[in-house]
Length: 138
Image (spheres, rainbow, N blue to C red):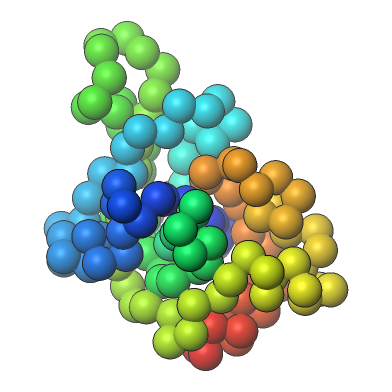
């Protein structure tokens, strides 16, 4: 199983917004970066991702599950190349894991978040997943 990190600005779509969608989840829409799109296209049903608040907070705050694999982004015109996946909230991190804390952990120096802070959809290795979960109190 692969792991991921999904970034959202909390004033546009917050962890609380995701939780409010319940088991039916919500499409992860609005991705307009080709590298991020390629990552969405690799996601499989049942995989997990950190829900990361960008800009305000800059922290992993929860875990979501991919509940539907890629399909055309309904917010785009027909024929445009953008895709979405549906995600549902699984659980909050008891302690948000900030970008500063991630950067301060030597074992996370190769994490995409540390080296490409602007990429909105990114892979997370098994080892990185375990470390961030532990840092977050899971």
